[in-house]
Length: 77
Image (cartoon, rainbow, N blue to C red):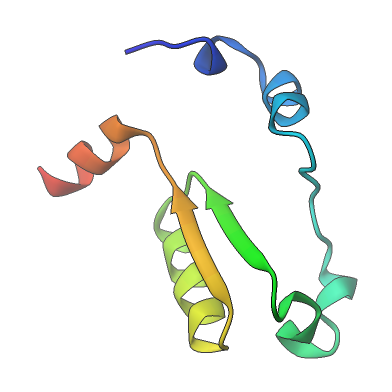
């Protein structure tokens, strides 16, 4: 099922999302303290995205996932 957002390329999608940015390893030199008190959203993920989110959750961070409806249905099948 296509929608407007899915018709955009990745750069256009990120522009539509507003304040998205990628974080580098150097921002985690002191552990997850940089993200304490912030909401972290993992947009789309394979097995590693899920596992990294669980690791961050175990570190006390507030983690959410944004997945396509079809991706959830595929995992359940």
